Length: 208
Image (cartoon, rainbow, N blue to C red; front, top):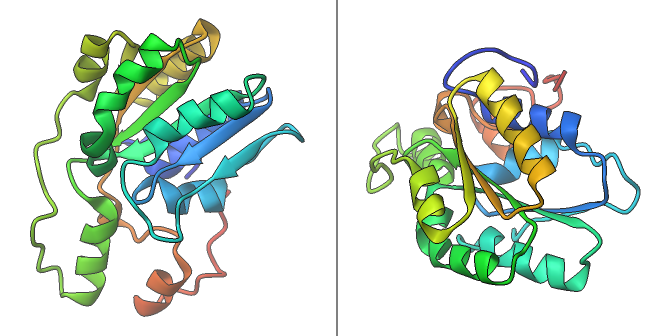
């Protein structure tokens, strides 16, 4: 799953690619929503001074983009990396201008599935797939980021994802990668209570 070739790309595949390229000290910030379960289950920090941060106490969307600015100011020697979904992007995309103005060397990875994925998955599990106010157009957000002045990429296939990550990590940022991903409600994410509620043994899933 972390090395799958299917399209749209699975969120696990995105984290798998990040694991393979991430070596230097980094602060990885995952927004509430789509990115969180995959980061907490699959991310591998390959440097002893790397850390990851998630806003799970209240789960407010829009955290990651401004969060990478704070991470960089606190630890300028560590690469700031932000992961987030469509809802988060819509709520804080104006902060892309801040990254450009301050030349924050961040790599931003956008999980583009055209929905509030976390909420939609909860509606699938608990509301018999009666979806309400969770879907919208899956736009090309690389163009939005480019308009703010970031170097931007769009990844729809595994080779495009690998090439985009390699270029972004080599660039010095800020860089934005718009990754077209599979809707997360199609395969229940690795959230313990969700897997139990759908009759799946949470401890049986091998991430590799």
